[in-house]
Amino acid sequence: MKAELDDILAQAEQGTIGQVEAAEERQSVEKAAREKIDELRTVFAIAHPDVLDRREVPDYLVDQISFEIMHDP
Image (cartoon, rainbow, N blue to C red):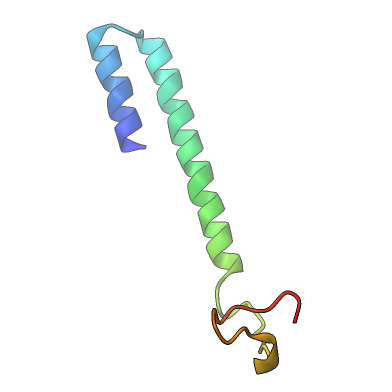
């Protein structure tokens, strides 16, 4: 976000874009960053260990070479 905002500021100072367009772009970048942060917070809240139910995988369903769950045991 900071890099994009700096780029918009540089373009506005060079006169490549106008002040109104720069303000709109800045608002758009800030809104997109807030949405991404909110989405990450939601994902971390859902994945929090206190919220998840612990599930044990039986040893016979775990591949002994890759230690991944076998899809077709």
